[in-house]
Image (cartoon, rainbow, N blue to C red; front, side, top):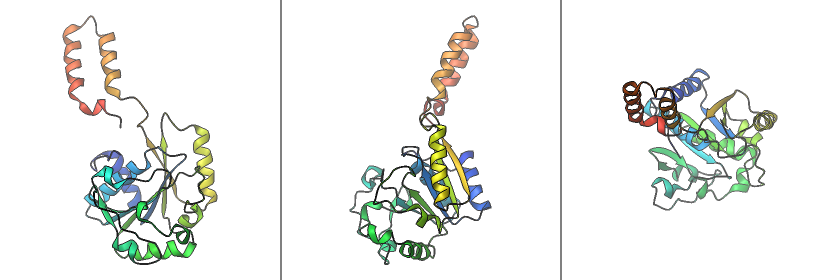
Length: 235
C-alpha cells in the first residue's frame, strides 16, 4: 500500500472537497477491489492528520483486509465489537494513523444491524473529527459484508475509486448504480493510476528516438529525466 505525501496537489484537492462539503464521515469504495482504495484512504487520513485534525480509519473491507503486520504493527490486535466501547479501546496505529482493524472484529453479525453501527459511529465521533471508512468493493458479493444501505445512513461523502487501466466503463456504471441504490449521496470519483506504466521509461525512449541528430541535447535531457525519480514510480 502506497501513501501519497500530503503535500501533493491531488490529496490537497481531496481534503479541500471534504472540508467544502463539511463531510465528517467519508466512505471510500471501489467496484471490484484492487483499485487503490486503501491507499487513497490512508493518504487522505495522512493529509487530515497533517492539518492537525483528528482522524480515524475504520476498515470494513472484507475482500482485501489490511494485515497490520505488513505495515509494521507486530502486536496482537485486540478483539473488539461495534456494540460496546471495545471498538474505542482497541484502536491501533498504522503509519501514524489511528486504525480500527477488521482482523479484531468479533461481532460481524451484530454489526450488520442498522442501529449498532450507527451508534458506534456516534461514539467514535466524540473522539475523532473525521472518520474514513474503507469499504468492501461494491460488486463483490459476500454474505458477511456490512450492507451498503447501513453505511450510507451516516455517510456524508462517498469517494468511488476508479483505476485507469483496470476498470471499464461498465464496471463504473454497475458500481455507481449499486451505490446509489443503497442510498449513498454526494458521490465523487477518485482516479488512481497504479495500473498505468510509469512515465519515465516512455520519456527516455522518446528522447532517444527523436533527438538522435542532437546528441548534446539528447544526453542532457536523458540525464535530467533520470534524476526525476518520481517519473519511474507508478503514481
